[in-house]
Every structure is written in C-alpha cells, then in structure tokens.
Image 1 (tube, rainbow, N blue to C red):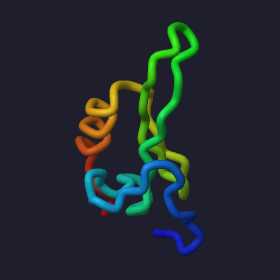
Image 2 (image 1 turned 135 degrees about the vertical axis):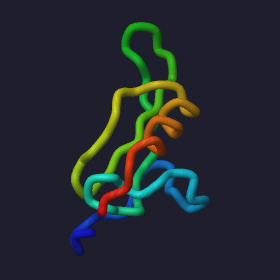
Image 3 (image 1 turned 90 degrees about the horizontal axis):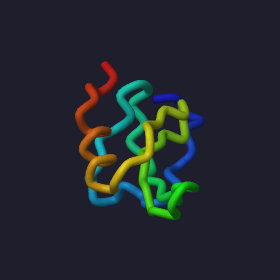
Length: 74
C-alpha cells in the first residue's frame, strides 16, 4: 500500500465489513452514500481514496457484497 493513502472519508471501515482495496491494498476504503438523480433514492458505492477504485452505485448490501467479491491485491 502506498504511504500517501488518505484515510476513508464516509463510513469508516472500523468494523472490518469491507475488504481492503483489491488494486492497491489500502484497508481504509469508504462506503459512500449518494442520491440517484432520477428518483432521489439512496444508493451506495465503495471507494478507495488511494487509487480511486470504485464501483457503480447500488443498495448498501449489494455494494458491500460486490466489493468483497473482488480478489485482494497480492
């Protein structure tokens, strides 16, 4: 993991629910909540503040599940 990675900014991964970033290994990833413009529905995505890896917004449960399906960095 690069030394310059910032800590997570939204929902801090203190409970270890989210695996580290599969691209850079940063363990401080964020679960970010956003509003969908079309209908104002809350959606979530996981973001790595170090390498900026992220995913498409989805439900909170699905965003966590999808992020954790990725393989971790070697």
